[in-house]
Length: 442
Image 1: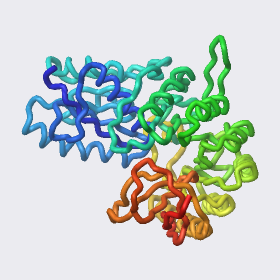
Image 2: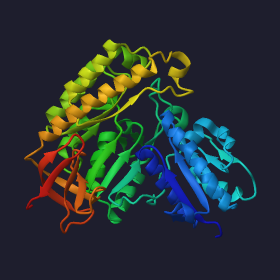
Image 3: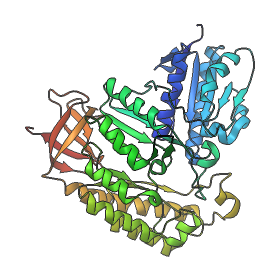
Image 4: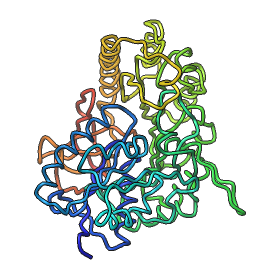
């Protein structure tokens, strides 16, 4: 096949990484070759994110760079896929380098879009397909991480948080067949992966029913853990309203399910949570946290939090800071609110917090979380953890790094260990972002 070298570039979350690997799997079956150097490619596919404004700005800047590549290679084709493709549709063609567009439900159509782009201009498919889960497609790695294998178990979202664009770019929620998920687990295990991460906009609302079973997320998680007893199992992202006692017990009872839960709170104010349409209260959230800590004492907790949403007063913001201290997150992803066109908030709520106030509040959140993270990490000094080796530290080839079950990064001297090994590390020092230690006898 001529013009068959595909370069895939991914922006955004782990869901997008998994989607890129699904795309690579689809194209590989059609005899396309996936390349890792953009200069070797006949086709460039950019998998995009629309959750925040900055994510889209990066794509426009990247397209400006690709324009120079297209000047050198007149036959080079460029496609935009993913959430930005779905949100903006044919408006993306305003950038002259783009030849085709595919929304998140149109990836099976990519081989035809690519081939047809050589005879037709400006092709697109942004149709929603309510039953599309890409079940049965074996992913092909496009990153250099051969440790973690991603499996998307749900697509889309039914929550309609007022600030969020996801239901409009990825459609309504649907769950993949547990049979196909287990087949993917076995395939990843057979191919030497050391960790499986189950993904979805809201993984813990997973539900699939056939004539044999009614499978919810706790049941699926237990099945995955039992299918791959030698692999670490993780999942993300959870919605607080769906964190059940059954799920917490499954995590506590299965040794290979990592003791880490990412539980986005977004705000600590009940007034703001209601305006966000989060469907839980501050009290409900803290009750879930207490239950998690009581059943999984060594749990690692992380969260998504943002400030400056419509109507947020200084009192509301102080409630968020108070909640952060009460929970004591090990780490958090923190943002200031940026209104996304097409969301409920953009149509019905005024973006009334001044930009300078948003920035001040974000700086305050980051400062607080750094202090909390440092305190939590220093409490680990003197403890030992099993660490899954991921590779060499970015700062030194004399140091390795890996992660604990709690998803904390640990750096330690490189000895005779390799990527994918599990080692026992004694923690000797800590910063707010990283644990440091030395390997001890196991």
